[in-house]
Image (cartoon, rainbow, N blue to C red; front, side, top):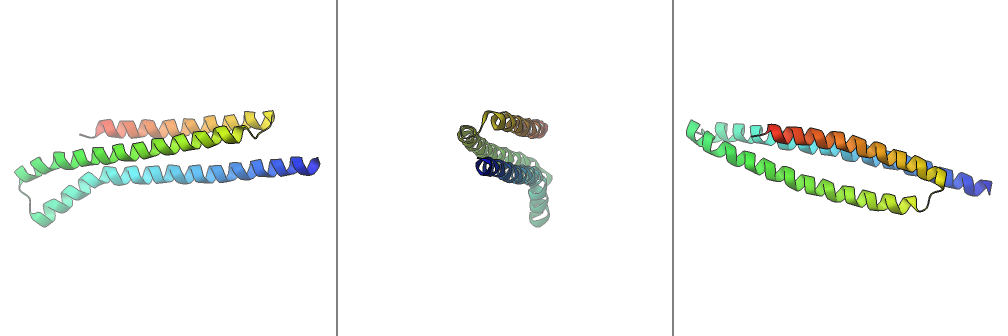
Length: 133
């Protein structure tokens, strides 16, 4: 019985460690991608202006197009992030069925913490989106 309990504890701990690692990596990638999209507009417009010697009228006409493309890229990225979140929740539900009541309480606390972290990032994304023309 002790071996089974130790095995379950080990599995639970390893699951938490791997989940934390994967979650941290996912969050880091979200930040990196968001930063790249936010900088894309400035960088692309700067590149086109320098390489094509754009006139002020051309810059005025092209800048909104690049902004629109960046908004679409953000939307595609958000849909992907939403799909990932759905998969994570499905597997959390399946994992929860395998846990003891004590483990389930801790698991739910971990999930609540992960969701709070994601809400903070989503709020930051929303603020950045609203700040973009």
